[in-house]
Amino acid sequence: MTTPDSPLAAWLRGLPKAELHLHIEGTLEPEMVFALADKHRVPLAYASVDALRRAYDFDDLQSFLDLYYAGADVLRDEVDFHAMTAAYLRRAAADGVVHVEIFFDPQTHTARGIDIGTVIGGIHRALVEGERELGISHRLILCFLRHLSEAEAEATLDAALPYRTLIAGVGLDSSERGHPPQKFARVFARAASLGFKRVAHAGEEGPAAYIRDAIDVLDVCRIDHGVRCDEDPALVAQLAATRMPLTVCPLSNTKLKVYAQMQQHNIGRLLRAGLCVTVNSDDPAYFGGYVVDNYLAIADALSLSRAELAQLARQSFEASWLDDAVRQQWIARIDAYVAAT
Image (cartoon, rainbow, N blue to C red; front, top):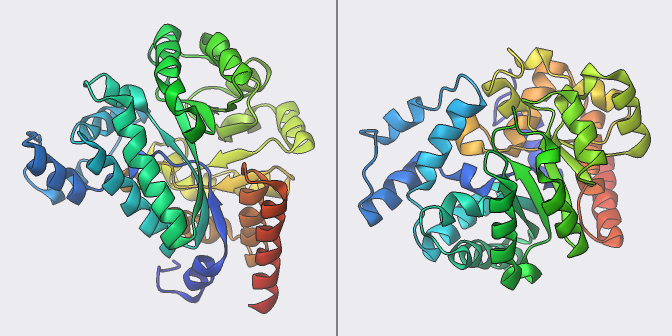
């Protein structure tokens, strides 16, 4: 097994990368949960950091989400959201991430009486500082919780409009099963009319048909997860032909039992079939690893070459919302790095 101090790990940390599928609330490490709980006198169901970390043993997506939403309860003021985001950016920088497009879930917080401006303000301030101090550029994506109603998503979009210059796009996350993309067709159409880019979780817990629906009904420019596309060979061919990006999260997929073990994961097959697959960490505090950990896991289990790992990094920029000139500059940096190492 390749270790975090191996030559491959060092090489991967030097490889420029973008991360495109990252829930900022999912970076809340147990130590910070306890610190913020103490700050705000929020009672926790766990006696220690170790006890909370041991609880990160999920049976499925819903069991993870239950713990995820409970952990988010310690986030109460702008300083908390700033601290959480800044901590993630430091971890990302150490992994060689130079551009992030991160999700946040405002409904998780507004339902607890936290103003959406408090959430956005703390996250945005950390992102601006991260660009200035760490050289990490950013885009922010507001996600609607799909287990809630479309009317609630509409209200969330309304609340976010005063901050629209800080938000690049909208997404769709939370429980996939039983909540098809069609449920949010109108709010996504409205977001499009307002100039927001669109992405959606599809084909993780839900079927391959949800991927088609996200493309056809929600008019997304990127699919988050998408690993169940291989249930439909015609869809795989379409994704390859159109270069529709898939933001794949390997450790998350195995932790949530989408795959029983990493050796079964299809990201290598999809890459070799010409799909624009990318590597991301999803909710790294909960799933046991940040972005380089995900690269290492698939390199080991799927016998990916350095050339294939570099191609995954190139595709992270291809799939990003960076301006084309900047995107091409980073791809050239990857090519130069690979040639020199």
